[in-house]
Image (cartoon, rainbow, N blue to C red):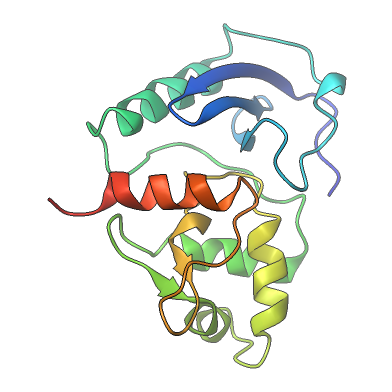
Length: 164
């Protein structure tokens, strides 16, 4: 993926490790755990703790980690992905907190019912973790499968969202 050269970044501590967030003028471009798979070269983006989109994202994520928020209201720019990836990421946004969906159902919702493996690849490259909830996708039999941030984090995120 090729990201905007005007991006800035900030760091955020989460209960499951350090995260980096990046944004351009008006939208988030990246939210991920440091060291996760498919992470872009973060060094190219200057640090900015004063960027309004990043400040809003940090606030909402901290509320989410404290179980004070279940949904996000943040501008996201996923235009660095292919049209197929963008459709998959859009489909992920319909999965409610506390729910899961299968890769097969995401493939169907993305208009490519036979492209389950390709859907898995697109989900693994989701540039805006948690906010675009790729952790809510499971195998058809309900098994927890891969997560770019690590399966332990996927389990923790699902537990955080599970109804009491």
